[in-house]
Length: 531
Image (cartoon, rainbow, N blue to C red):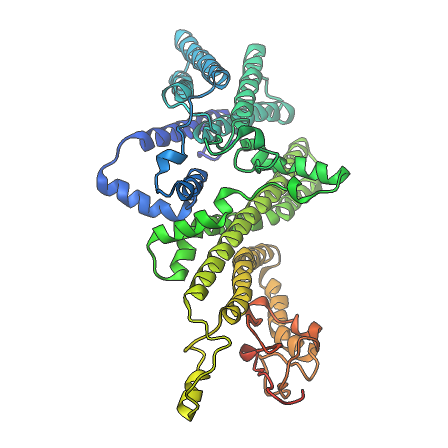
């Protein structure tokens, strides 16, 4: 037996993890199916609500259909999902039943030959996990993806690869005997069956077109994003038909798919009204909390995988520095781990950008709808003449809070909506950079010690000096406003390169009389004077 649970060089530890990991997942899946008390269920819903997608496809289609029928009924727009197709049900259940019989047979054989007690218990417990996979498509059928089975198959595939790879590693490095031929064939067949089950689940769709969507229009006029398979969504293969069509032909307006109902204006505004929040900030958060949280988490994972490549490269160099069969085998393992980290980083980058862009579209749609709704409710005094010409009346007329025409409000606020939406999609730069600096600092400290922070201190001191010296005298940054005289006028056609040096958070959102107001940068518009 190994010294600890993470000594994967011990065959018993590898087999133990191959039993513990799938068993823990099955226990969790079964616990979620048990009806919980009201307080526990309410607490779980409150805790998990920010992580969920606030506007699902079924809700969006229901909002669209309810508007057309002038009633708020989800039952009229959403048809129940049919049972699992016979093809998927036969493959998933039959091969899972084959695994149950095989693992029970292995446990019975170990018991008959008076093997160790663990050689009997581990196969029997593993067969229970496959028993869950056997009855899941039958008891709880669905035509969409089985996410629980997908995770369970991944756990079995990972542990199966560790067991088989550990046996080959022991044989090539320590010259230990390989398992029997029957055992090797059984492990290869096990991995093949798991791969087949994973492929079957990955080809199941995310959603089924409802009664309001024509199935023949999917991938033609209706976007396949909501109805594609799990593999197509992970690999973004659903975009390939549009790319191929645009490669050899000219794309017209009719060739581009319609926007997903989850990104349309009517469902988003209807959802915001149903949320019940009066503050626009709370509405934006409640409608996009899931996308923003997943964007945050996936960004941290991507940053971690960024430094996994140099980490494994260091391990490879340390292994080949002292050549030996063991170090050579470890170098190959580290190379494969570096390749896997690179692939996972690319995948996490695509996913977190997708969540961020969806949040951007929803935020912009909700803000624009709120702006136009507010503008249409304001009093429009454009073209009217006031009878009161007194100073008091003139002062009141100049008050921006008293009245404003619709065009002025829309022109002033539409730019702000775009800027806020782009800020939401680019938020990962704000929290990704500190996390990346922290990982890099820890990594350099382990390599160089305290001397690694000498360059960081110099960089921190020189950065504000670089900003102040790099800008021309007529456009000094706000860090040292006393060094140069701030300009009185900042025109849209003067000093464009210098203005782009400021971060997007400090850039202005409003325009007035063709001049931008840079009050946050110590700049002010010049009314009636030459700049």
